[in-house]
Image 1 (spheres, rainbow, N blue to C red):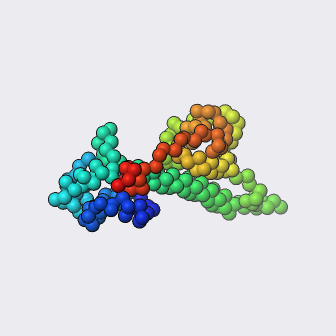
Image 2 (tube, rainbow, N blue to C red):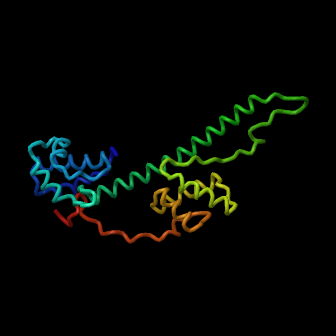
Amino acid sequence: MHYYPHHIGDFLRDTVSLTPQESYFYLRLIWLYYESEKPLPNDTETLAFKVGARGQEDCLSLLLRTFFRYDSDLNSYTHQRIDAEIRKYQRKAESARGANQIRWTLEKDKKSDLNSDTDQIPTNNHKPITNNQKKKKFVVVKPESIPEKLWDDFLELRKSKKAPLTERAWNAILRESKKAGLTLEATLEEICERTWVSFKAEWVTKKVAQPTASAYGDRASV
């Protein structure tokens, strides 16, 4: 992830007690978190090397304890605000990949149809079959993010319901999944578990929003 919304006012308020050097180290930690899309490892020596703070391990340790939250299961430091932005970015990226996959499949089928038409030779008084006379079959290639078993279950469910996966049906699932704020994998899981033929965002019970912490730290204030 190479872009994130930086709220200058929030950052200045949260770092008012820091020296210019400490503010710089904290900003470098934020950039590292976004760039890797992973929590920061509990290793101040490695972090000091990556953010240009060698010899300042004690300072980094204090910044980690102050602005991040230690997760013993991951043995890493997490950040609520950054994690939320990364999840939002990944959802958008996944939706874009799904749309590109569909577009690529349709373009491939179109080229295949054109090549097939070119190869036809008229016989007697019959004209070659044109694209408009052909009934195109819509095919969805399994998105990379979807497990093979889940994809097979999804296709089998639609087959059992005698509901072919049309372009309109697939686009509706992608649109409603994005509206519900779910990943495509979570949406297909929901469809299979509930044996739904279609999917609507309002069918999914929304989770209660967690209290929002300080914009750049897990503390209520800095």
